[in-house]
Length: 410
Image (tube, rainbow, N blue to C red; front, side, top):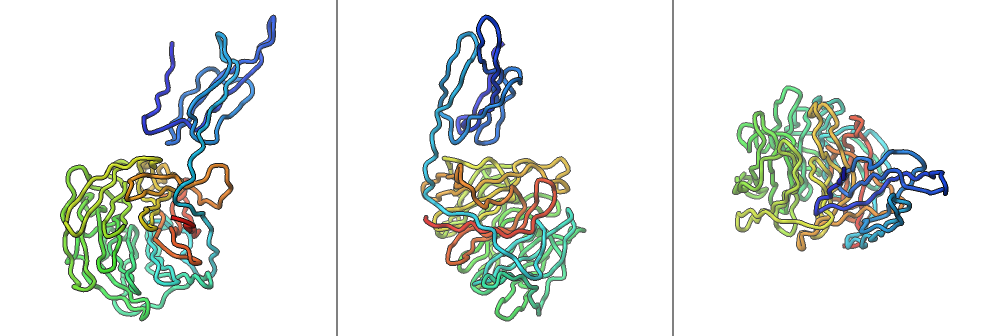
């Protein structure tokens, strides 16, 4: 019987685990008793042969061929490895020190940066149980958390699955739900006055929802997708901060399914929808042009991350950065951790090529695998990059750490 292990056209082998042993007879021979293959996207073959003897491993990059010695059995095996090209976008992860009264471990929250301060709002420690309704502020100069003073129309709902962005000195918060599935409206927070303002009550704005995606340009807040009380959505709504009005943009066509947990970023004036969850994880990318009110599905290539949702994302120049996320839903849905992933990737929105930014063989302060983290495009110590706080661990615990992927060159 011939055993096969098929590798998808857009995948490749990166790891071979084998066992070799000595066979004594008229002459002593060393043979390879078993081989197991793993691909870049995480696909693993069944063991070929019987596991016995001494283990060996072949790894170090993209495996493009093999060499060895055999008769009627395999005696030795080596691999030809293609070293990955140095990514055009280079940077590194750092873990940011935290002091003071901070949010603590949580997921399903959001963060945004204004000047030298990072704000955090919403989230959960126990599944489906919002923690609090404080707005936390992290001072990047002192590396210290505190609870921001609050006046005005302070949100009365502790919520999870909430989204927050910044424009100028103001934060904009939309959606999210409490444990009984009551939804948040649309608020602004003036960080110079510490004043909340209810801009749109729940019943007057876009469909109430949670686990949607939000981004902003200089004048508009964009809200995409998410989960309402009854269905997943794929609408895109824009709030103009000058006109103080909501406009529903054109809805993407059939190639873009309803989804929650997508990446949503503005790059050079266009709105990008990256991946998400529509009942299963998806790996498609769509682009919206506000000037033409037109959607386009784009075909990306390169070192693509596998399908995922609820990942961290940010924008640096023409690149969209992503880290981690959920790659398979838990049987208990949001009650469980699901299957989570790591990995730092960049999508060049001009060439549509993905690159994996993690460096093989170099020790870095890379975050643990996670999903449901809060993230934003930020600047720390003069570098622009991806700020990520908290998230859900594979153990179903919650992280309370703060990481920054600072870009050195783009």
